[in-house]
Amino acid sequence: MAQEIELKFIVHPAHVDALRATLGGLSAEHSAPRQLLNIYYETPDKQLRQHGMGLRIRGDNGRYEMTIKVAGRTVGGLHQRPEYNIELEKPELDLARFPAEIWPEGLTPQAMQAAAQPLFSTDFHREKWVVTHGESRIELALDLGEVKADEHREPICELELELLSGNPADVLKLARQLVSQPGLRQGNLSKAARGYHLAQGNPAREIKPLTLLKVPPKATVEQGMEAALELALDHWLWHEELWLRGNGKAKYQVQEAIGLVRHTLALFGAIVPRKASTRLRGLLTQCEASLASEASAETVAYGAEQSTARLALTDWLVSRGWQPFLDEKARQKMADSFKRFADINLSRHASELKSAFAQPLGDRYGDQLPRLARELHALRLLAGVYDDTVALFWLDNWQGLRHAIETRQRIEIEHFRNEAISQAPFWLHSGKK
Image 1 (tube, rainbow, N blue to C red):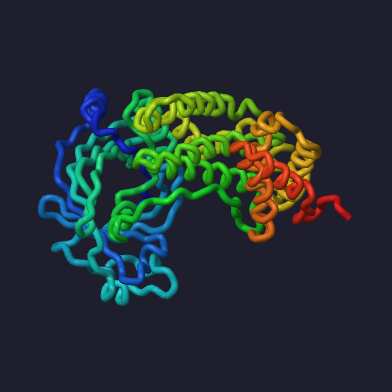
Image 2: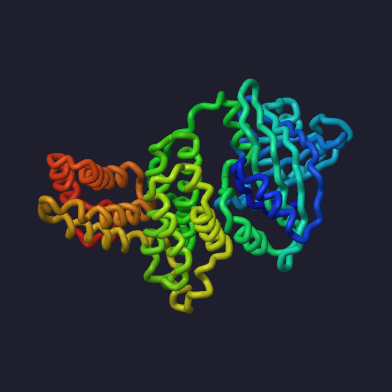
């Protein structure tokens, strides 16, 4: 078993030559391009996918390798997950050769062997550079080719940084050098994820409006903050992908995701000092400026501003960059119950909203939009500790007010304002008798 730690970037085709020149300038062991053909397998009822597993056979110049990847953690395109590799004499599955303990309850290698069939393939040329960076050996692989499922296909133009040995932080440090130039963007859609999508008929990917943050029942405050930032980063990457694929409405969701990062930092700001996120917040400001321009999706998404900010957020999450700034009192608060934190802050943020909209504002509703957006984001991050139906109904009235203000529907504004401020709290310890 190996622990795969790799960071994936999508490369803009127009920047491939410049990237290759940059990589060629590194002090590295270079390997010329070679063709890799991968066949991915799945059962008719998608059992492997449901358990977060991926199964493939790779062909490389007459050599074959069977690989299974099991569920791990993915943060902003940084994949950390166990994988098992078995050399084969011929390109045929032999699942009994994997360790028995990798199979989830209810799955057996015999049953999977009988049911698994080829689902899609990836065919690409891989050029590699192996560098020593910091304390680590890192492989950089430039992949050019396509993923195919029946008549559907999609180009592959990717750069993967894989930690061969050493410290994951060095992968992120090397990546920071690379994204200082345009042409790279983090992508959390792996080759396998795109292959599965094509195998389903390549349906249009849909916008996913922000909803409630869900955390485990006994999550700590720190775990809640991490989950909130991961939610924002996933939302950012997903909708940037949609925007690049021609869905103009997805740009708004990218802006929402960046706002959610800001508002998460503010929500936990009483515990995490502002100086812990100074650089990150500065980068977010640059991102917001590029999104406010008339620049194309490609210019923005592959620009150095967006790439640097996304990578900084990924680094902050993976390295827990806030921890060196915490004193003992703050550490204790971070270890406290997120549920208790949510109860206290739901009351505070709801009170601020009701105070802001207690009276009709006439022509001044637009002035309150930034506050309303900030409070709505905070409430979404907190309300998920309660029943979804009740919490979403309560939030829908405030969201309706926001939409009515944005679209200047005067009658709707007053309707939603009255509904929103008259709602009873759904959370505990609200102070309401």
